[in-house]
Length: 446
Image (tube, rainbow, N blue to C red; front, side, top):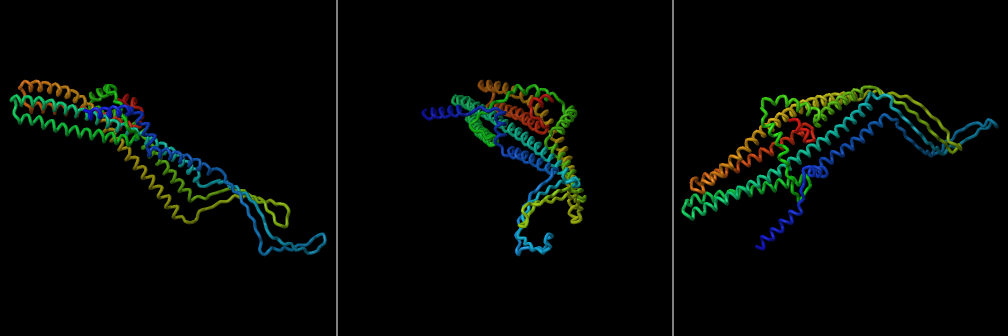
């Protein structure tokens, strides 16, 4: 008795410590602790600086220089003193100079411009990747959240099955002691109870594993999940259940339009195509001359002078690439191959998105039909079990019929639970493909 009391205290303390978590809180926690999402955010910051770095290519570059020369041996120069017309010998021992050079690119074959455009596209692609990472994470959290709730419901069903089995076993024991049934019939009920205990152990295992996976994804611990509002989804499930598979073509097309506009992965592959097209233009620019304008000035003095003298030059220079031409040609061909690969990848992704939308829509329709049917099946199975139980207590039904009715009831409840959570998980996966964050938005589509 003391042991049971201690277990009760521990259970109550754990329940007090456990925090009730909503789906939104779980998603926020995952976003704050997921490494993939954090890396994606750093990639955005990195590409923002890349854009600024690429833009600096349009600006002039400047450099300061300083030099000091010490002549060994000294440099002697001879001249004539015009006032006395006598030869004069001067010895130059050192030279000090300071210089400034400013260079402005004038024409580079478009390489600076395309490099800047590519950096901007790369930044936008990193933002799309961040959004894709976020939506994928939100979808995973919701799926794991639903896994825990489904496992909890299956656990409750397993507990109900065990309670019914125990009840039937106790009734059978009374009948056996009274000589109303054989020992074989009594043992059948005992076997059913044992099987229910095994089922309960498996359900507890599934529930704990689902909680572990959820905790690992979200970083949460000691939690209880808030149950979902079943009535919130009943209208859309009822509407989908009444749909015909032959009438889904128009809906599929409308969902495709949304996905082709919002899907982050598809946006990125289009950006990749644009980047590869710009790389082709950049590679073509390798065959073009480059022109730059520069200005340089120098202040210098030697030991023979007291002040610095200044001299400056302005130059316009052009460079024509001569060698290696084959490397430039190979770079151009590789850029064309990259473009072709991105075009094929885009077609592949479009086909995959189309297939996913069809699959998810058919799954939603069939799952809704299955759930609607399973609700009726549960009601009928429950009524059947009650009827068989009454007949068994009156000796009009066998123990086998009672156990069969119980199994049918439990299986119907399992089927209903599986169908319901399958609908919600499919809805979550469809939201990811369509690029939709708001659940209400996707519900309105149906």
